Amino acid sequence: MAESKTGAVFVWMKSAGGITVTLSILIAIIAGIDSGPYIIVNTIVTGGMLALVAMGLALIFGVMNIPMFAHGEFFMIGSLAAYYIFTPLTEYLNTSPNSLLAAIAPLIAILGAMIVGAVAGLLCELLIFSQLRKRSSENWVMNSFLLTVGLSVVLINAHQLLFGTEFKGIVRYWGGRPLEIMGVFVSRDRILAFVLAMIVVGVFWLFMKYTNTGRAIRAVSQDQSGALMVGININGILLLTMALGCGLSAIAGAGLLFLYPSYPTVGLEPLYLAWFVVILVGLGNTAFALVGGFIVALIKALTVEYIGAGWDFVIPSLLITIVLVFKPSGLFGSEVRGVLDL
Amino acid sequence: MLLEVKNINAGYGFLQILRDVSFDIDLGEYACIIGPNGAGKSTTMKTIAGLVSPMSGEIIFNGENISGLPGNQVARKGIAYISEDMNLFTNMTVQENLYMGAYVIKEKALKDDRLDFVYNLFTQLKSRRNQLAGTMSGGERKMLAIGRGLMANPKLLLVDEPSFGLAPQLTENVFDNLDILKKAGVTILLVEQNVTKALQVTQRGYVMENGKIFMKGLSSDLADDPHVRKVFLGV
Image 1: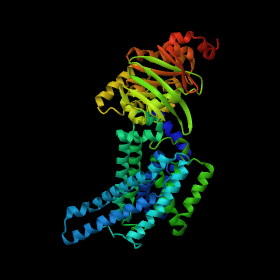
Image 2: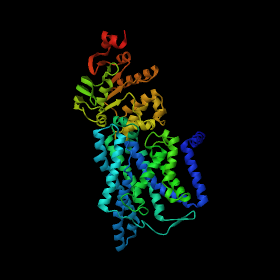
Image 3: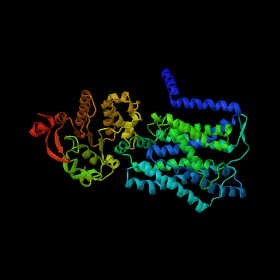
Image 4: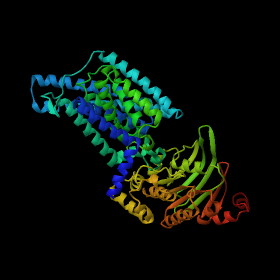
């Protein structure tokens, strides 16, 4: 048994996905030795949050078949909600200090942002996508794609109209002295943001794997008619999926508020990066999106370090173009069958 | 009467397939619908299962009109539909597929009871319970599809083309299993292109042509009918 397992690992290492993952780890180590371990630390911290956005994107595509180009706006909604929850809380804390509240205030903000993002996703599904689904099933991917682009424009302008264009940011969540990891000083907020992202990923995985509802989501992504036949309420699952996907994006927006203040187009960068991720690994699989999040974060960190900050969108898109020429279904593409399944 | 279909008209978009189809099945009966390709047999099944909504007509199941209900609610009423292409969750294990079949059952103990029942019936599935459904052979998949349908303890089993794409020996196997289910008291409606076989195993039959019920009668009578023999059996 152990032998066949190691054998399977070797086979996997020789596949496109395996080569990429192994190479990425090697490159990260070499770059870490060459110009300092902060590259690895940076990659891990941004990769964690990017993975959340990309997983939401992959989930929505895998289950609902919607190429979501308004996903960045849920990142924006998350950061905005966290700002408007966290700022009053800190003001209250300035007048009446309370160490317990100070410790959990960021969590309240991030949780609140997740709920706001999920509700926004729910409304979008109810008001837009379910309406389209009722009226036409032809050309669904193209039509829903155009709708998401329109939705993105509407949400960006709604933010501008209602909350203005200025940066709405915070200086810190928890603050405190930076921690030293491998000789690099990393702020506590970044570490906690990463830990939070990984906890969310873990909870999400457990939910998808072991709960009835999570299994139903996977069933719908694998065979919609089959799901209907066993009694799954498809519309309910689609609603839930949209809420989950948008909630994940909102958590990322809220979790990174101390790095990216909220403004109308703050979601565009994470949106593009998340699309890089899902195109790179193959559309519609959340597990690979997690891996891809770290790979794209690494490419970005390396570009900034060795080529220059202005190039950090050029190099990833160039690489992705090359990958798509040789492997049109993405690095893990041919193996992708369902939303969570390897 | 367990199921009574009254004058249903159904189809896809503007294309009407079924015209005034009426038939009925009693509790505990094993009935079949036979007919040539494109006669509307599968559409009839899909309409009962709620995957196609009828333009008009009534489907009375257990004294309740279920026509127009979506598939998930029809499944909750106790109708299990085993489609031609099975619609398995190919990237879940056999056991996960079976548990999905019992999605409408909430109590864990009841689910496990049903699982035991299915594993007793299809012992092969038990030994393969951790295998992915997509990696199984055609015959095993068919068994799994039937097993998944049985997990919800249905009152009526709709089986669409169980012999489709199977080697003759495996077809026999599937029919044997349906026979066991029939003896266990499950009501079965079978749609089949293998007319000889279908008329051998069932009690009552309906012949469909061009979206209409063309003939009906006891299966043994239909097997001797000159029209059926000429059109379907080529003798």
